[in-house]
Image (cartoon, rainbow, N blue to C red; front, side):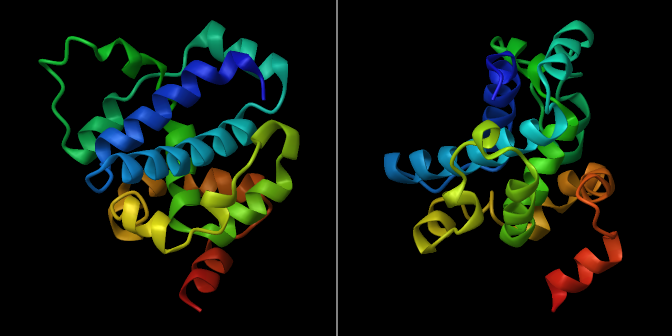
Length: 172
């Protein structure tokens, strides 16, 4: 994974944890952060697979979290530390939401991405009871849907999957 993506990964992870807070406690916080971080890292590896892609991201900027904030009803007008929000990449966060909601899709995405780029994704692809208990909002498909729906089609297209086939696999 290119170090150039670190700000986007950190901002995307922080946004997900802010929008979908973990259960109380340090252990839950750590598990939720691991899951969100793995999802955002994998999504970033898929979205920006080459060093040139990462350089273009820095040149053009990721776009920020304004639309995501509106979708979740977040109000950050008084947030003095809002600079990190400019590093949120809407597509990466949307793809991460898709991956968090569907471990099978996350496994397929991990196979598509270069394993060295995406790193370890076990908490994302094989979540257990601890992961679900630590991050019930972050793992809830219905709550993630408005965010996931934004760019699901482009993720599935990249992966060579059909939207209808994916919906049927999720239902069946």
